[in-house]
Length: 106
Figure (cartoon, rainbow, N blue to C red):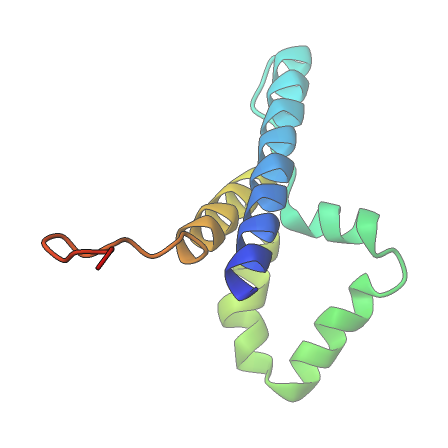
């Protein structure tokens, strides 16, 4: 069950990362320069009211964690985060391989 959920989420994140990559590419071509969408813009678009509270709650719990992980992740391109996290989830959700040299049927 967990493998199934990991694979479904992996495919959804890979699809979202690909859509973000195409969107950034079209925007870059239209503007004659490189334009990328940071993850903070995607979070602000999807979760309008709760985006600011995420930063506040993380800074309240551990300020060093926000400056070490939160800020660099929110400034990273959304397409790379989606594609990378999707690939990791697909790798974790892959079915186990049969060992070589063992009979599977008696």
